[in-house]
Length: 194
Image 1 (cartoon, rainbow, N blue to C red):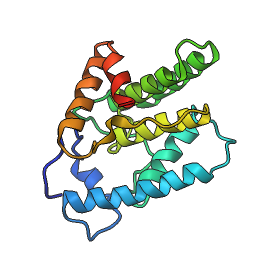
Image 2: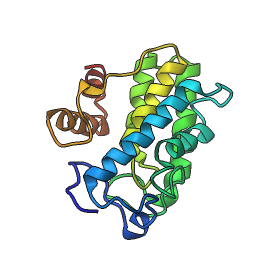
Image 3: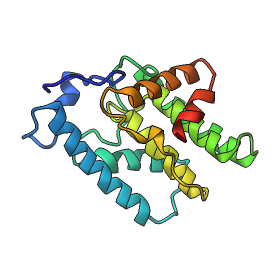
């Protein structure tokens, strides 16, 4: 794929890149546009879906990724099988995701944190685990927004700028994630609502 990756973006392995469904795409810009159209369809699905499958469940988490990227990648909705420049080792992904979902359910059941903080922590931890070959940040953000909606809250504004391209909004987002990696969620909490 021609074109530079944005700061913090995860490169694909050649085997993963070979699973691209639309064969006409040759540049990063074309891929970004195609994926964005795919994600728009997932947002429509979120608005129309039945609420029988809870957001904090493995079936929902995987189906959301499949809906977001299923017209783009054959591996959409499947946990990654390769190592990345970020995230847990691939064999640990299923266990880490299950632990995160169980933890988030506990936070909800015991009102450990306010709903917005649970959504922020869910987003951060999911992005940190990096369960999929690509699209993890976008998926984690939409998971957080779906969680908020399921709890009667509006979605986050996510810095009100583009998080796909390098720039001040993405730089602030990446720095807030790094601070959350060190246990300081304050900057990320501020960013998601800015």
